[in-house]
Structure formats: structure tokens, C-alpha cells
Image 1 (cartoon, rainbow, N blue to C red):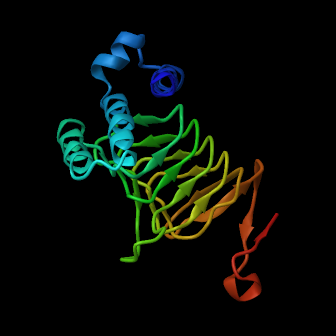
Image 2 (cartoon, rainbow, N blue to C red):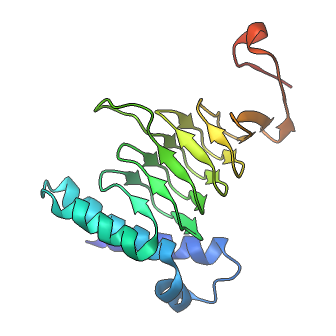
Length: 192
């Protein structure tokens, strides 16, 4: 129970730290659907992990109805998670999200397969996913990466990189602009 509460406290702190519009803890607790969605998910995920049938899925649908944010009960989400203006966010069943991640409205962490194995993205720690971005399949997004708004990520994104576009390509790595070389030249390598 203390781990559950400390996780929620970290999520509350994340909203206060990352949203300049937050007027205090009570403001976040009463009026932030992203905070409501993650608190409900943490409870629902606990029920799911306990092996309780059907109830977690039903509660996840209730959560979606009230918040506009769909998080599968099996999705694993780290501490300090912040969903800003969360309407339309979808986080799939096998998605994994690291600590201190930020996701904006309309983001999808979706699957591309009908298999029963890993089919949704894994985000490292301190990842930011911009408005309307789509991250598809069992791809990995490294620590401290940023995904630009409206991007479609279908390949791994390295740590400390910024990826933008459709399909997304890395434009910054370790704070240095990069130029993509053609796939014929090096099969998704990057040149500084």
C-alpha cells in the first residue's frame, strides 16, 4: 500500500513540476484527468496483477469514459508519469513506460500485431511524447528521448535522441543535429 501511495505522490509531483498552469496539489487532484487516469490505472493494474478476472477491464473502460484516456490494465507504467491534456491517449496492453515520462494529448502507444506476445512500445525513463504522436509495435524508445508532435514511430529511437516526422527519423542525438543517410547507404545509421 505504501508503494501504491508513493507512486501516486510521484505522479502528483510530476504534474506540479511539469505543468506551469498547475496551481497546487488540490488543483491537480480535482481537475487533471491525466492524474485521475493514472491513479485509477495504478489501482486497476494491481487488481489485474492479482489475477482478478474481468473487473480490471471493466474498470479500465469506466476510467476511459470519465477521463478520455484509455490504458489497458496490463500496461506497466513507472513513477512520476504525467499525461497533459490527455484526451485521446491510448496505451496498449503490453506497453511499458519508464519513470518520469510525459505524454501529451492524442498519443497512441499501439500494437501492430495480433500475436499474444510483446506488441506495444517500451519507453525508457524521462521520455517525452508530443501531441498526437503514434508509437507503434514492439519498438524501444531510449532514456531521455523526445518524440515530436504528430510523428509516427515504427523503429527504435536511441537514448538522448529527438525523433520527428512520418515515419519518424532521428534529427538530434546527444544535443547534436544529425543527418539521416539513405537506407541503401547504411540501413538506418546516423551521421553527425
